[in-house]
Image 1 (cartoon, rainbow, N blue to C red):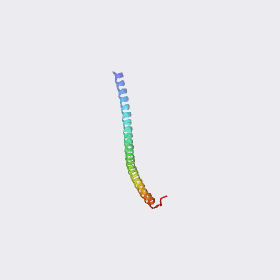
Image 2: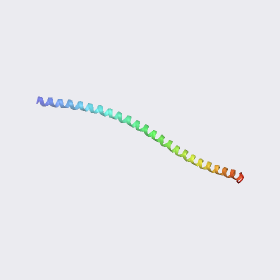
Image 3: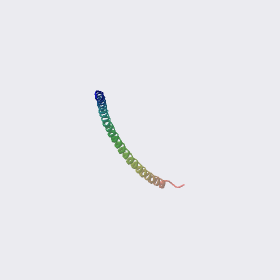
Image 4: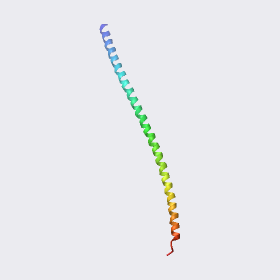
Length: 89
């Protein structure tokens, strides 16, 4: 009976040691999850900022294209007026 109790005591000690290691590892993993969550939040903020910048670029490109079209029209008008004032050859 004494040897059975010793084996049981040894197994309980091993179980307690394993439990402590598991708790320590769990604490480490919880901290790592917190770090990852923070990093994910930062990356999401960067992504949102990039999306906002991309939207702004699209708006500016559209404005540039509209302005180019208007300038072409003005240049056409100027060329037309200058062409009318020139003597025919």
